[in-house]
Image (cartoon, rainbow, N blue to C red):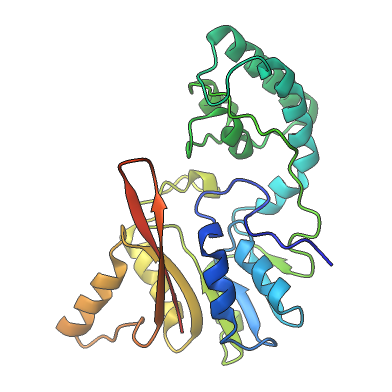
Length: 274
């Protein structure tokens, strides 16, 4: 039997690892033979969890961010980490890397990129940049301060997303193709005002983009993820009381989890399902 992942095999901004337990429990109220469509596939964690719980279900992962490319490159990523560990082995963990060592690290990365024509800078960021900070190119990476957060063990993804159907298209087209009473939509868009560069886009997720997503919830079965930072739930409640439009979250079940940014800041992640 394939390994069950409770987090994505590679670092991914916004993956739902903190909702793994609640999501699994909530799935019990949905059919094992339904069609599950992960409209904003991201790291594929939600699709993986569904397929592990309901092997007979048709599960579709919309890999708009081409996370599959990063998964395929894991052997090369592990090879680069193997080259970097000896350079950093005598330095204290989580401390700033001295400039002389930083130059050696950059040289090793550049040589690796020349050899393989690819570096997964998002994954590399988790080993060398300050917590929750990401770069997507060598140019961006070379401007950052480095910290010794090098991953001790290799990355591994054997069996992850096996038997899950991968597509890569606009979520609206995917919704139109699969909307039916047999479909459960997994809706986890980038949070409002999020910098989407790590999602393969140079744009910010604007309010209009965010509100457009709500159209897929109308008369659908769904899981929807947001946070209290977006205040989208309060906005829909206001619209319902002040206009003739209905609230797309009416009748849904809500569960939350707290996410810490640092010692003094946190926010509430929200999962709603219906």
